[in-house]
Length: 621
Image 1: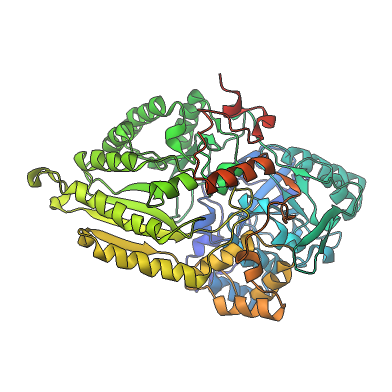
Image 2: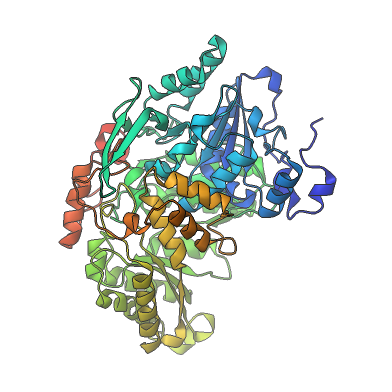
């Protein structure tokens, strides 16, 4: 019988002790003496958020399908347990075995967003692993990172032994086989990392040297080890029909953010929005076969007992088999009394008909993401959505019985003017006005409409056509926010419009880390030692401590956000081949400045470079 890492005297004093118990339904238990490799898979946030992440569920199932490997999970301890563990010197442990992470072969960390970077340091620190990769010895776990933020891993380069660039189903088996041989032959840590560096898609940061010009820009980025490649190529699953997928996903003990079965219907996106990193780096668009999805859905519902199923995709409406899939799920889920969640649908007649069927009596709000308030601005970002589309969809929704609409926009987009910002208020007003054109006796929801207009601040990201642009500073963001708030209050239907906005300081830090270089490693370490943790949680965010860390390291944060880069500047992530070529991104940046729309991938190939992966939309028909 396994012994819990935390005794009752601790569990009874901390918030949500079930976060740390393990042994949930479908958790994999193995005899550690019978496996060659122990892999601790970490999501560096609380259990409720980490358990909602599909990527870890896929890798957990894939690794544990190997007889020689036991994959377990670990999440960031909340601040109450963090303090107890430090005081009582309790090492961070895995949920399944309750063994210390220090005893594992690998610590794999998914890096989903920039604001989790101090949590990554917390996990390494509480595990008793040396913080800096260069200080680790032969008995320390290999720390490997993956996820969307590895498309610029440089701010974290000092802390990781390996970064995995791309989708986990591709070369992880090869890496684990190489590690088994390393253990069997008793080779050194250095020799294992050299062998790993030769696997396509794996980046070992200590095998590269960086130099800088006097103005702070990169002068050179080059391998210092003969086994390290000049370019690291993103790994992609070409055939989603044969890719691993968990039929028995883990079922949490407590309510989590996504407490449901998640059905990933496709990867990538055909749309090409110029602000969207996911739409660029997850290319090409690849679909899972319809019959497989039907089978997965039924198996997962059966094995979990969940009462809701959700489709996962960047743009569900673009899945070519969406209609037969949704109709199948509606029929089957009605029999099982299971709810269906359909995010990322375009608001059209089919989608509204489907949502009418799945949202029984009470109709929740509908969500539109116009991103910009004017057609000029939507063309700049290549949104592929006209005002006619937006108003037509809203009217269909109102006539279909909805009376609450959420609208998502961005402030600070490249080439934005105050006319574009005013357009957000005017578009919100036009949608509200449409509702009141319906005769009073036919208006849903008591005859009033609620338009919830939300703005986030634009952050330029690597591998997008906007990777070179200057980010607005805090004063500019706040001025635009105040301006929009004032314009909304001038609208005829202002009482029907509610305005929400994001935190500007968090946005500034995200922008710094998104396009940062290795020099930020020292800032990260100091910020962590200054008490920064759970930075994405507003109650925990310590902006002043972050600014102190920049000042102590004599680094000006404006260098990373407040300047426009030239297209021939060497960027910290240029050593990664993400499929989309730099020539394509430059071409898209020029088209953005000219306000030209690029057709989606099904209408016309834009020559982005991802055809080399020989799969998905690039090879349809």
